Length: 298
Length: 141
Image (cartoon, rainbow over all chains, first blue to last red; front, side, top):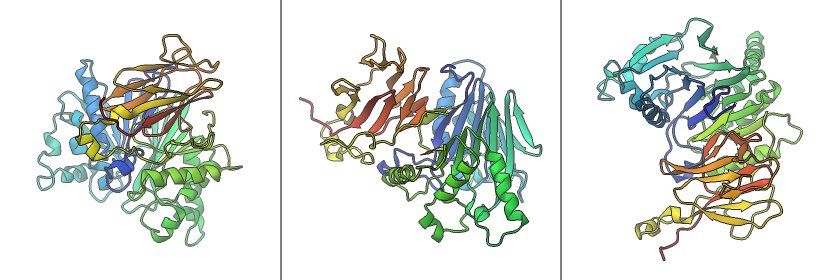
């Protein structure tokens, strides 16, 4: 094992906030940028989502590219195309660099093509540079195969239910380790369905199987149980529900993600502490709140 | 799976003058405009088992932590590596970075390879606790 991450995955949170960016001192610890997670495995570089956090990541990657070595391709997987997950893309510096190669992956299960959705946010009415004017070699791939293979890294994915407009969860496997990125989904509705039927049981089973034995699960935990009561059907999961599912599936580390814009650092500290107080006899899953600027070894 | 660590604040009660885990640094805008800088008040409080707690003021230089005599923060602990971690100042932020240690570097109980430091973060290396404090800004003498 070494600092280059050649035989382990290094996972860095560049954006952890849900819905809208929340700059300011009250959120500087857990972060105010919207979702972006970077995974490095040897020379392979994978990004989950292009929220505002991808701007800072882009600056780092551009510096590395200026180092002179031929840059390896970047693989950007989008959970979906709601604003908070794509809004940083126009500010992603490698996309403006000639010679950079970027593949953007997303669901094909859209009314409009993924490429059109991304182009529209860079329409002149919204942004002065068009997607096709970016200098990098950008390829947009709507996923149709079950898995995406990038050298020794395998990325599985599944469509998620109960998020307005849909979303995709990803499972990345490499070197015998598994990392799952599963944000923007309302798991409370599969755990406590309005009516029990074959579909509801299947949804739970599929989710548990997908996250089973994950070394790290990065998961939507936007609401407290109390908040969820007022925000049912908004497409996000309550903290107790994701903790319960992670424990059932034998997840080793759960990073609670997509923090509510109203949750200050102090509040998240309190939630974390309450969660620790509650974990006596609660299984082996290590639970924490994802934090911008944190790199985890897996 | 990484080793479980106690939640910050649970392993040792807050001492007099110690900053609450969730509290942001008490540096006023007025103080900054008057010429004080935040970094003047930034230090590490090193709590080493069997040794007196010390403060290490931070500037923009690298600080090595470990068993080796070349480390500015020296740990006399079997589960610390020779050069275990380091503190660096990068992009106007302090970071802790694990130096491929055997037993890992933890921030508030979570094993990290690297992490931006925030006020009252606890860096855990074996049984040592190193608290990052962005204290009150002080005027230049």
